[in-house]
Image 1 (cartoon, helix red, strand yellow):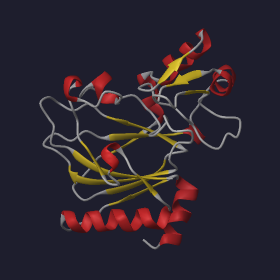
Image 2 (tube, helix red, strand yellow):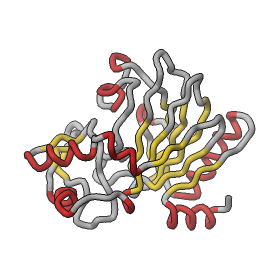
Image 3 (tube, one colour):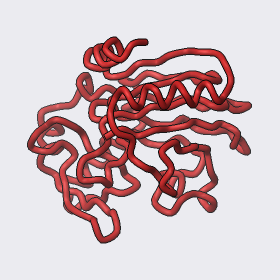
Image 4 (cartoon, one colour):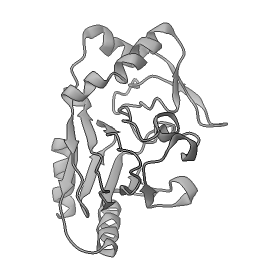
Length: 219
């Protein structure tokens, strides 16, 4: 897909899913090429531009990750890099290995997310403490600009009763009824508008740990 076709598709749909074949090195080249066309890659954990994501037990997971809270169980919907002042705009995923018992990625389009008037108000007014070490701050889920969503129960903590109510709503499994799944196959690529879509990982059947997604985050 040409860069202008990619950006047009992202503008319209908010994601692009591609099936491809080839070796892992070709997958990496394609991920890098797509990432370069979209913007500047942001280093992840360990300073790596291409992160390898695998299911982990709670005890083995990164301290501030969702896996530390949920382990290999189903993860809630979230926005990657919610701990940053502005979350990264795009995510580029590549499936290096789907695993013996694949876990899907669920996508929830915030533009079509059905909420009542009260919930819409709470999204813009309820304050959460966003934990990021010395760079922690306070924020609502939807900022005044309304350009993006910020939500990650792994780093965002409600500061009021209204915020707790909103957190319960956003982590409710019923949200999946409005979502759709990406069922990974080896060498698949998913490009996601991280400002528009919430995403979640399905449960990994124990002791599954061979599912490996590569991720590049674009600011």
